[in-house]
Image (cartoon, rainbow, N blue to C red; front, top):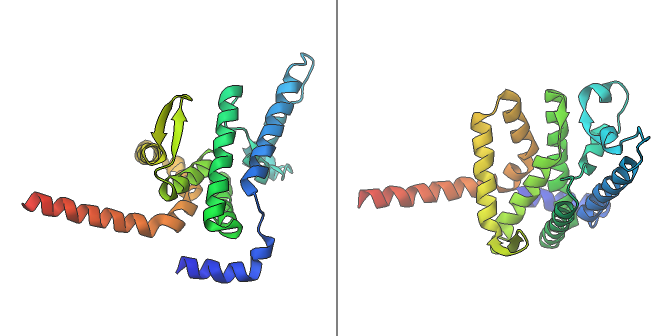
Length: 217
């Protein structure tokens, strides 16, 4: 059903899809990170770019409307080496997902998550791109489970195991977090549930059946 709908939409609006979307996102993150780092070296500097782009409902309603989207360019970390590694991994994920799905479908996946983050931000007062980027990683883990990355640049780990760990942490945060945390998690990764929810329900069903039959033996 979803694939049929996306196919119809792509025939009508596919020409508007942004190719290499993730590349533009990570370039934006890198530019803001480097510019903010350079400005911070000046002891007389009072301008901090990252303070100007994060999502803040009160400031948006006060007229700083760019924050509705600029928070997408918040760097994932402040440590340079880790920052470079994470941005490279974002690029790798985005490139492979776009190659697998096509630009239009990847755009729909990403911007569905963006809309969820924005809605969550207006409900809770604050938003972050962390869960949005996590939703991209979870999609990558489902579609490329055997892909290996090097933890600490040395230890090879298959993406599927990292995906399972992140999924378990999300469940833990959802159970133990407050009302706003639950809202934020659900809305921020709504794109993942939209694209993969049916597959997970079927997986849980068949896993449960196998476990049930083992207990009966």
